[in-house]
Length: 412
Image (tube, rainbow, N blue to C red; front, side, top):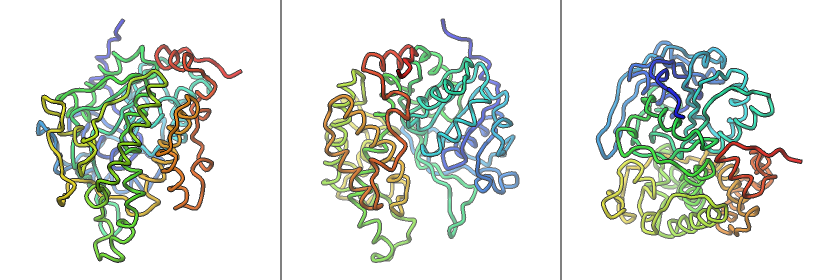
């Protein structure tokens, strides 16, 4: 039976994480008239917000022209998790995956019945939250889910190295793929998205797409397949961007300046390995045709500009022409495109490939190359593996039953 979620229309919204997506989501929800609280464990990321608020603007490109801009003064800025989430039945989390553990362990004691958790981008946060709830004895009746991406491509403006409280949206998604753990809550999870103003361009666009379990959402995250090959194989362009070519350091864009046909072919083969793993696991995953990878925005364009009646991208940015459509970054090998998308995204793909008997030579080569550039092994220097997510001991049927019905089998 579907839950009555009407209370989500007026409840406070707590946004956890004050990076680009966190600040943008918080400002977006506030400009839509909601009560919004912003939490960060970092005092620096909340600095001056009580005086400046958050200025939200930007191109906001999307197929249907949805736009919302303005200066948002939130109802609360805090480093106190309990203060942020008390009575806030909608919880949005948008932080780097490597910070999930700290945030989630602090969140569990503050959970209340009726809360709905949305994570942008999920990156296995939903599995970790359920794991910590089990470990900490929390039995609150909540809905936990996440999305394949964030509702925007957005950046915080930097002035001579100083981070301002101005966020600029490059594009707004018109469709995102989401799921929840367990999937028996999916109707309610999808319904709850209608109460999130930061999802308005999606719910008023082509609408959200239901993924096939949270494992599907791991494969639906386009960051590893786009970011990793383009960042690693285009590293000379990035490192020479200012030192040799004389450009402004922060103006480099992996999309605009790094992509080329050879890298796109590697991205497609990376994607094929993902598909093979998903098939072996018995779950669905998104479909992208070969030609969709050969654009300066790669397979990301359809997220905000959609597909035509033949299932092809409405907009393609040719690889043989200049383009300033892409977000900037990375500006060093210490960027999250490498330090997060390899030890989290690529590593979990590798481990799933090993578990389900699927070779992953392209994905493995990315892990090796990224590690070599950092003079370490990303196979070993990461906490991310299937046991860390709480699923390493399960066979295929047990894993699918847990994902779909919530029946967790303890490790013997």
